[in-house]
Amino acid sequence: MPGAELAAGPAPGLSRLRWSCFIAGLLVSLLMAWRAQVGLDQYTLLVRGWMLVDAGWLVPFGAFTAAGGFQPGSLTSLLMGLPLLVWGDYRAIGLLTVVTHVVAYLLLDRALGPVLGSRGRLLLCIFYWLNPWRVFYSAHIWNPTFLFLPAALHLVTAYRSRDHAGFAQTFWHVVAIGAALHLHASFLILAVASLLLLARGFVRVHWGGFLAGSALVTLSLADWMLAVAQNPGLLPIGSNAMSAGVVRLEPILEGVGYWLRYGAAAFSTTMTRFDFTVALGTATNAIAAPTAYIVVRYLAPVTIAIVIAAYVWFVRRRLRVVFARRSANASSLTWLLGYCGFVFFGLLLAFALNPAAHPYGASGTTSWRGFIALHAAVLPVVIWLTLLSRTRARIAVRVGAKAHAALLLVCSLLLAIASPMYRQGGEHAEVTVVDASSRMIDELGLAEHATIVIDPTNGFRSELFRGPEVLTLPPPLPRM
Image 1: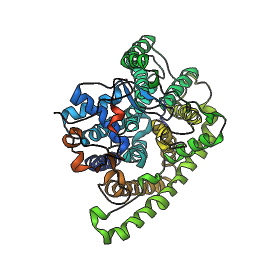
Image 2 (image 1 turned 90 degrees about the vertical axis):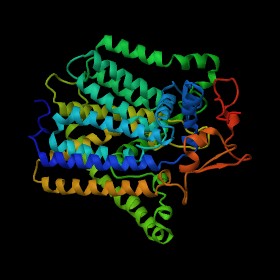
Image 3 (image 1 turned 90 degrees about the horizontal axis):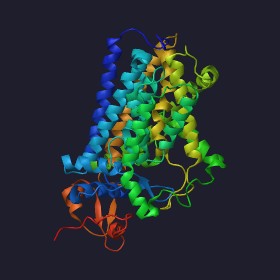
Image 4 (image 1 turned 30 degrees about the horizontal axis):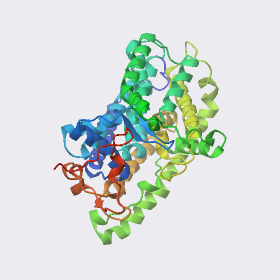
């Protein structure tokens, strides 16, 4: 079969280990969803969901963008509001996020399983499902946390279209890009990858499916287009858009850096501000917090050496074959590595076009701009280690994989217990300061499970949501 260089016979032991890793990762995500906190970014998105629940208004635009304006479309509002209709608690949104991550992983595992084989599927579970970036962003309110499902769907539909054009595959491929467009500007990564896949003969297009998918995406943006017609300020185009990134080397190098970090046990600073005081007490925190910080910030990132070794192999052995036009007898392995290469080029372009400054003062490239490419960043590592596991180095790979999985689970538990986004209180806690109380705060459990401070003078002003303009939202004020 194509790609048989990785696939091997059934291995019940590896299958049991894979499912054990999956369940352990799922339990950590569920714990995180239960403990999730609300910062200002989460609060502003939650308001959109509250508008759907309380006022029946589907807000036709998403989050603020670094380019100015707002993300197009109403999918963000649906994802914020629908879970609240099922369970009137802000943590319902985190649970929906967990569900989308589960579906994303299962799609990848099922589609790529015949190519990767038992060893490869276990490594995919470790490097993708237990990935610290994915785990941390699997359970709290934020629009980039929903990108993992469209990303997985993009790969699966492209893979199934490599030899034959099918209506369903092309339709869902277009829908995946359209859904990502609603959620984050990094949809460009998938769009560029698709164009390269088509140009190099890596996918076949069913034009009926393409037209149907395009029609659905266009229809989903209809309410946003009407809103833009009334208020052009909604458009995510401002002084920061399409900045000098294309001529500055820094954002491109930053994109390469994140691409490598996505496959390792690497963490951002905001993830690792540990405080165990609330959970374990002051005395224990004095020892546990610095120890956890050393493990996560200095010990775990050493695993990036594995990623670098994998990409050295990729550049030496596969680069020329991957970027050649796909031949009729090309293996599934070559196809997968080519897909990863095209997504990488999409990521470089997206980072190059990164706005130089955020409208609220933040600057520089941010890690979540590449989340939509995380699956493609880890696949070359998975493939290289799978090939290595069939050589004399198999024992080292087996022991190393188990140690890596254990390290990732320990780090994930540390994040779930002591990271600011998943603990209430403590140093560097997530706090939202608003100018007035509201029914939303009381009815969605924010007052009890999150930290909301009422400050009429310096709090987040509900007037930002007032007025008839499309740019503003009705304030979540108490009913008289």
